Length: 241
Ligand code: GLP
Image 1 (cartoon, rainbow, N blue to C red):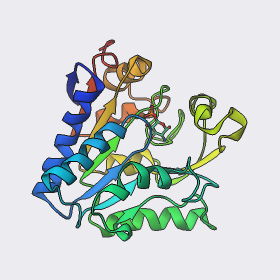
Image 2 (image 1 turned 180 degrees about the vertical axis):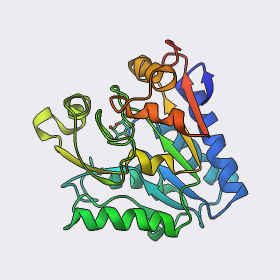
Image 3 (image 1 turned 180 degrees about the horizontal axis):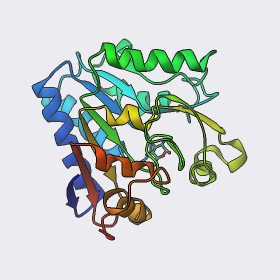
Image 4 (image 1 turned 45 degrees about the horizontal axis):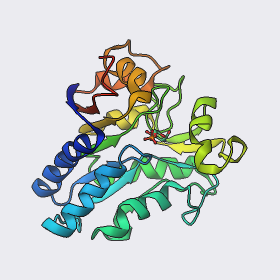
């Protein structure tokens, strides 16, 4: 992993945005893998700024999000589709049909997951996958114990993830128990990964991901097997490296 450490999350986000910007400029019809959560938010803000002020053009870009809560539709404020609309898609010139987020209300998840993977392949594969990390070291919703060869599928959320996300739902009991998520194997197929982590609460996960053993207990550690991962951290998240 190529590790870049910036003093704070703001400058790290700008650094992350540079990798996305370079790709979109070089390959206007690139395929971006996108993530939700608080981590990529300021990078998305920076991309919106560059779109508005510098004309960064997303009109041909295709996007695939990592995951979605089961049971939540696009209008639910905690759904990842809603998050993406609010935090990026509604503010750039990407045609809606070119944005893909797994459907949390699919009738047949097995078919939906298979089709999601098929669509990624038909678009030529993911050029750059943006990733955050859970405090327990998970990527997307590949919770501890997920197979490192896993594909897009349904996953039961870990207690730690439910606890981490309870603040958004107004209580642990309101957090969905299941999610549909790209697998670790799916993520490893992307050509490049941009792995972002900010804040002291991510320090252990970052250490385990970058320097720990490759283990299904820390699914982000599988990124060590990938040839092109750029880790962009702030000092607090990188403190145990
Ligand atoms: C969830 C998401 C992950 C994300 C993680 C961390 O589990 N499925 O994709 O990386 O939360 O979120 P945050 O960036 O808010 O710390």
